[in-house]
Image (tube, rainbow, N blue to C red):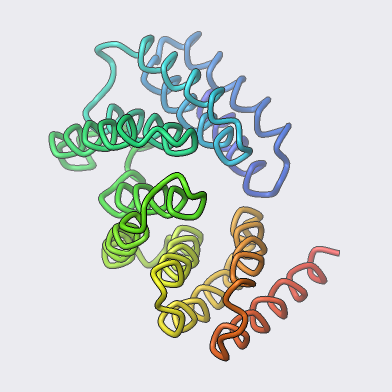
Length: 255
């Protein structure tokens, strides 16, 4: 029941059904505790915290993660410890707490370095690999740069991390790859590399069109908005037209 509920929560979230996702996450957490599986309960709490971060509730997400860390105890494998630390770092990034963010990213990387081969971990943790780690850190560095809570070096660091994620990402992870490409395009533009950002942006749009994820659609819409300050560039104007057409086609498909 816990695993089915967590799957239903992720499907609901990816379809834009946020309240349903929250209910399924709560059911997954309760069922995992009732079934004597604190590690899976912590994993479901990490996923719930990620959704809260997506919705802009960083303080609530941080509270959920700390509860997961305090209750999982010795049941946490190095890979799960890394996941929880990374979610904590994500919350700190949203809150603009640079030092805490860097410290917890270091803790996540240290725990990941101690993880064994994926098959030694529960199957539901196999998704968390080096690409997921680099992509998540890169995305948070980008957010710090975008919100003005970071420094110009954060955009450069985001470029490096997201590139690492793309270089190691499994070809079947279409949604994650689309999100990575959107982020990489934004990072290049923030660094003043408009032509390169536009080139990657076209790849991002094509990748976004290959998935029906609501999360990707929302990020693509935000991407179109975020490129407006650079619209004087010919390359960026062409990119914005491409994004607008992709969004229009997507909305027509959902109607």
